[in-house]
Amino acid sequence: MTPSFFRRSTLLALLAGLTLLTACAATSRTEGTGEYVDDTVITTKVKAAVLDDPGLKSSEINVETFKGRVQLSGFVRSQADINRALALARDVKGVTSVSNDMRLK
Image 1 (cartoon, rainbow, N blue to C red):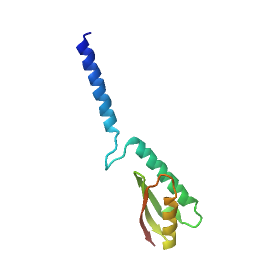
Image 2 (cartoon, rainbow, N blue to C red):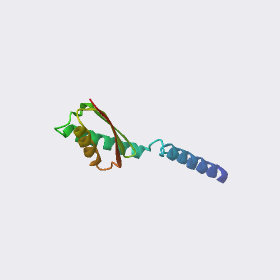
Image 3 (cartoon, rainbow, N blue to C red):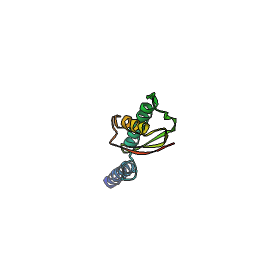
Image 4 (cartoon, helix red, strand yellow):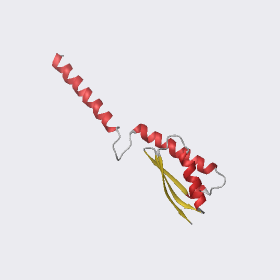
């Protein structure tokens, strides 16, 4: 085996590694693997907080998270329910902002 073969092999291995890392990287419209996992955890925690609140009829509140930004949607009975759901979501660790797309029934 020649030294040039080893150099080419090393270069190919480095390029393959960089390609894999780039494929998992986040962009402004997509999440990286770690961000996706973080957002899944945030979504789960927000859903749990909403479900655990005895005053909310939470089966009609949907939660979506992208890069720490939470969007709440669905139908609720009152403005007080909207305010409570927003407050619960804001209190979850990792949430950077909460947007409201909930509607009154």
